[in-house]
Length: 456
Ligand code: TYD
Ligand code: MG
Image 1 (cartoon, rainbow, N blue to C red):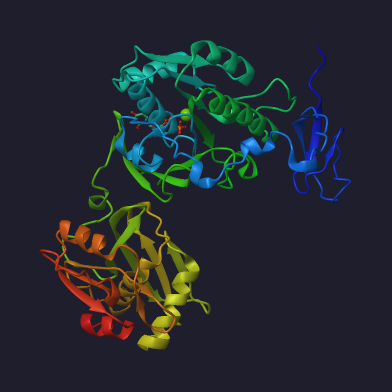
Image 2 (tube, protein in one colour):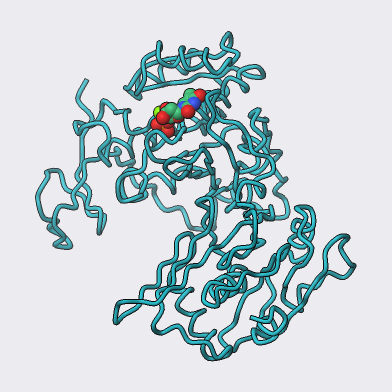
């Protein structure tokens, strides 16, 4: 049998060549040629346009005729993981889980797979750890191990040949960087290998209806192996994050063909594996013994879930000509913009002050509802005056100094009330239609109103 032909394809322009070269002869980019498998070109189909005869029309349907497919979902035994998957693992879907080494990807998947193996045939393929290591971990975590099947292998073709015999309904590949295809010569972990291995696995999943989890290590630059080569091939991309030294682990959906993105699952890493945190608001609030200046409580939203987090600001006289603006967990440019609004519409300038901002617990807040609480915390630190106790806030601040509404106002008010907050500052347009029990709603239209109410 002749060896499969390889082709070198330019990452920039897509031109392919039979031989490797340092420079792409087509677009002139350097070091962009990557090895890939040459797909045998089928003979060009003879055009049969005359009279529109042929069977092509049979494949084209009206959208209204398409029956909504019935997606079968299985519970993974970890409701927080089900939540980020959009309500359970979809049959035949391919899920990529990315994260730093040691964050707990293998732990999460072995826990999920052990639980899934009670309902369906499950196979765990590891290219990283030995069977003994995996067995020891499963025993330590008290996982039901009888039905979970295990394979240590790094060759994709071998794995798939065995999988075809084993017929798992769900399979984990840990990690995609350790797998290689026999059709390529480059080393495992190279972009070409990762892409080819993943392509074969995805094809297998789609053709057999097997649900597939791919584990992907994040490179130092924070990208999944290769320039996002995997993200477009899979149905769902989850990122597993956590702060160094903290037990809290967050699973975030970045892309999901079967559910909402930006959904967040919260876990805590314990000595018995990952435990779910079903009430995450509680952990992102550092309840202070007494009121402190510079701290504000924000009601944000992660996916469909409202979440209370604490924003802390430190404003201090700057020794530098160009004072620092540092935002952790929030966008830096947004902080600069908010400080400009505060000056222009609140009459408070911080040109000679360093401003540091942090969201407690390593949460990243990307929505504009943080604007108002951010300004409150900055101002509170600047004046060294704590905000009233039991106060929470949310709302977007516009460049004209107006407080603009954000989605799901009422859910946020309820979440704050549930956690014992007694007052909430919110945009006028987000005022709930009915009073929410136990919490006083303080609607504001402009930044100046908010500042007046707090007497800052
Ligand atoms: P692991 O799942 O191996 O990480 P990854 O697959 O993402 O590289 O997790 C490894 C870390 O988790 C390791 O530092 C030890 C810790 N850990 C616990 O704290 N408790 C546990 O029960 C387990 C299994 C791991
Ligand atoms: Mg691992």
